[in-house]
Amino acid sequence: MWEKIGDVRTLRLRALGSGAVVASLLIGLIISIGWAATSTIDDAYSTANSQWNGTSTLLERGFRPVQSDLEMALSSPTAPSALFILGPSGQFTQSEADAINGYLADGGILLLADNFGSGNSLLELMGLPIRFDGRLLVDTLFYTKHPTFPTAVDFPISDLTEGINELAMNYATALNITNSKSVRILATSTPFSFLDINQDGKHGPGEPSGPFPVLAELGIGKGSAIAFASPASFTNGMLNMGDNSIFLQNIVKSAPEGSLLLDETHLTPSPFTPAKEAAKQMVLTALNGGMLGSMKLGLTALVMCIVAVRYAYRRPQEEEVRVGNVIQPAVTTDIDSIMQLHPTWSREKLEYVKRELDVTQKWRRLRFEEE
Image 1 (cartoon, rainbow, N blue to C red):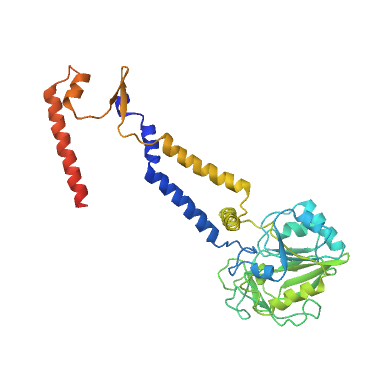
Image 2 (image 1 turned 180 degrees about the horizontal axis):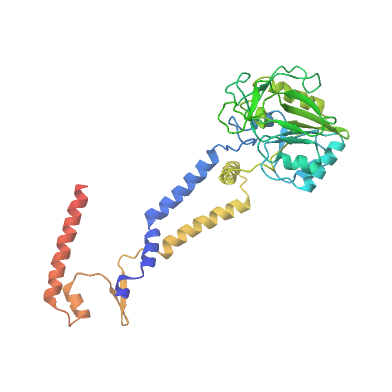
């Protein structure tokens, strides 16, 4: 019986190897690459993200993203003048903290803007007396779009706050400063602000009241480290709100001459981002006639595998079985042929089965034509 019906797995592979399925796979592959290449990247704080929560505007303003080996970027011959780290989620290492400390000692500027991420790990490794509180800052009176978009309106006179009357924030937190003598507070929230511990939007009992420091500066060697409790203030959607753009200009203006870096090595991309970037690079290089050899090999191997399945498991015109040394069709309704193979079988019963099969096939054809 097993010989007659064939290996079910082989039959399934033969179905996969049909021309229609292979064509669908190839078309699907092309559509998938095209979709991935044209899909927007939505990772927060990424320069490849042109949406409201991305930082492509910083790219237009001269910032260069660091996507691998932050330590090497800081130790390059053309040392950067300013390093921005926005909303980090990956943990920092001691060697990275040492490299940043050395960069600041030589006169560099660090802006670390965070709220609920991993910024505290860097501050701790650097030994700085500042921490991000990690609780949501809400202001029910001084805000832009919503109380979770509070504003800072109190600034001391400094180069970094020159010309600033309002900093617009978004899902910010507060700064905890353990040594106020070495840290200069440059902006605070209003007295109407509070830390919304249960995030219900209401100032409940036990929830600390403002004002809270949200922007602070600490001198390190010839340079300085700036901590800001609202990384979203530098995104595409908020850079032109309040005086955020002026704040950015003041930081760049206070930095020595050199390149502007934006750290992306501590951002956690979404699972689809690498595929989108690879597809976009593949399409661009293909259009420019410069596709990398590895990309060509990869695509060729994939197509060859699909085609191999088509030819290795293509469905024969008739399923066949081996009877002794003779190959015979596995399915046939010719009574004489069956009787030759099985002379002891009843012709009457075979003719009955044939009639039933003919009726069933006719019924199926009629149903198919009606549909």
